[in-house]
Length: 118
Image (cartoon, rainbow, N blue to C red; front, top):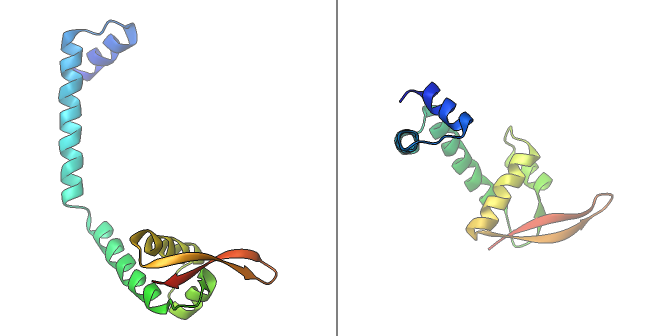
């Protein structure tokens, strides 16, 4: 069965056994392709993951027992990243159980999340 035949069958509402088999085979092929991509990601993805891990270690090193907001972590790390990325990494550290988020009152900004090392 060709893709056009399959789509016409679905559009007409007359699903045949052949169309079901074609769909199952297409799904298996798609799953195999996705598994292969997960096993061997592109070079750019590997580099980005390595950069994030290094940045995560730097951010963790900056944290102390006193609550630190993301903007202060950014100035301490001194990397060419945004405060949003620092916030993402801080939330990842919380999810990993390496940091804890606490509410901190910041003058003229209100309450923000402060992060402490665990």
